[in-house]
Length: 109
Image 1 (cartoon, rainbow, N blue to C red):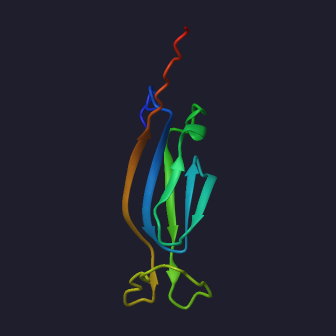
Image 2 (image 1 turned 180 degrees about the horizontal axis):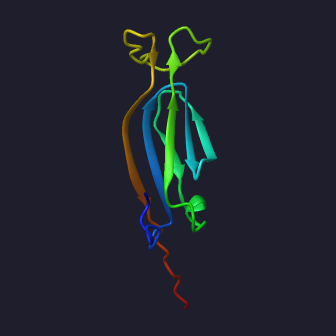
């Protein structure tokens, strides 16, 4: 849940999602907002566009498993650990990352 006023004094608020899996999906009220196909790097979601709706303050994240035998070519330094069942769907970390904007006024001569 994102608290009211979370965007106050911010240019943007990013949700950083570090996961392993096939695809991650981001929802509000069971409505798909955006998704991401795994490529080995964290996924950054700009929340500003989703926080403008008064009913979009509670979000859901789902991660679909990536199977070891999936016909996907990943160009990443290290493949994920597929464990004993031959698939991976893991959330490593999630955090909010604020982005600030500094406006410098010009001087008149």
